[in-house]
Length: 85
Image 1: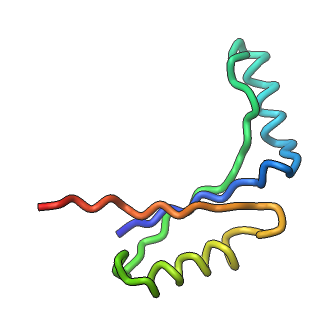
Image 2 (image 1 turned 180 degrees about the vertical axis):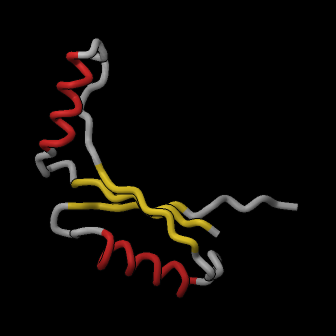
């Protein structure tokens, strides 16, 4: 399965790249785009069972210790939706 990890700067952290993107959008006629924040997106092919707590713990450790800087960034993990038969 593919697990997605989205890492973004915490709201209190200045985002110069997001501000530059917002200014560029406004100059191109997209003034309705406000407060642009940039981030990182990861897809991980995961062999573990999403219902297994240790599997979720491992992904949490990867996201918090490797993929993000906990001082300035937050993250969210998106597990794929499973279809019910």
